[in-house]
Length: 403
Image 1 (cartoon, rainbow, N blue to C red):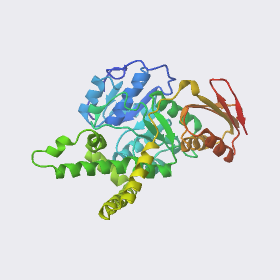
Image 2: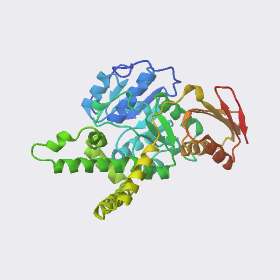
Image 3: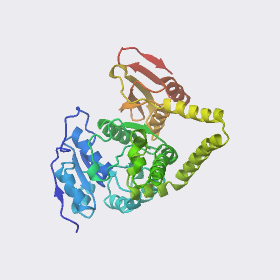
């Protein structure tokens, strides 16, 4: 037996504020791992849906105590607590693995042993290993939807937990052809309910994508921090000057070395390739300087400047420019993953998604999109994929049909 269970209030974070009246997609959530992401997610859920029972699981006694004292969870237990197995065999309808991939295998075995039939997701920043493990260990692998919140903090563990950590952040989901549409819908409702933004991404593309936008930037920031540290004198004059932009660009280097070492080796090939690409780009800058080639240096800087300007601005969707998209479809597995992946690929953000069953064999996929992305490309790609679609702006009430 492990440490005795620690119980807490179901009121959410200690600083909980009322956040809308979003539909409650789950009633009993098990979050395994109460580090920064797991505890922040628990707190975010409790801010929006105070009635949801959130069982937190962690190996660290202090973490469990803090989680209960701050009202982040309804109850906090050790992994060997009978309450965990009881939840998996009983009321739990969502399990979130918020632990490093290296320690996930025993939890996947426990989920299978308890014949748990609800939805399983994770928060790992790499997918190859966890997807393979889930496929081989879970009794109901189709119920597993890989996930990855693109959020973090320089403060590690539960001490950095914030109920608003995911507001406006991207949260990647990786459904596939076996994912039940209703499962994706419920998980989408949960994530958008805590004000994160869902992006659908094929599992095989995930690790390459995050290597470029997350993993390699971490090691680039770490390299800059090391460069400044090694170049500073005994009085740390240079480090005192390293404020403003330098401090902002190296913030992520303060992350957990142990955690990032694990992430790097989980995605070693893609991270290595990305670092080699960065090395080649830096060599272009160095070569231009060495050869006195102002034109080449200016061209590189211009390319970088244009790329930076093309990054999306802060997400502030206009509530009076929402667009409803209705897609008649056959009731078959994989169709929701196909449609949502197309929407994400053209930059469209799905605010809500519903499946209206018409007959046993047919349904209508109803999506509400915010005012971003390329609707023209969305229409063309859906038509090319064989779908008949209709667009209807929610305000003003105009209607466009495309088939």
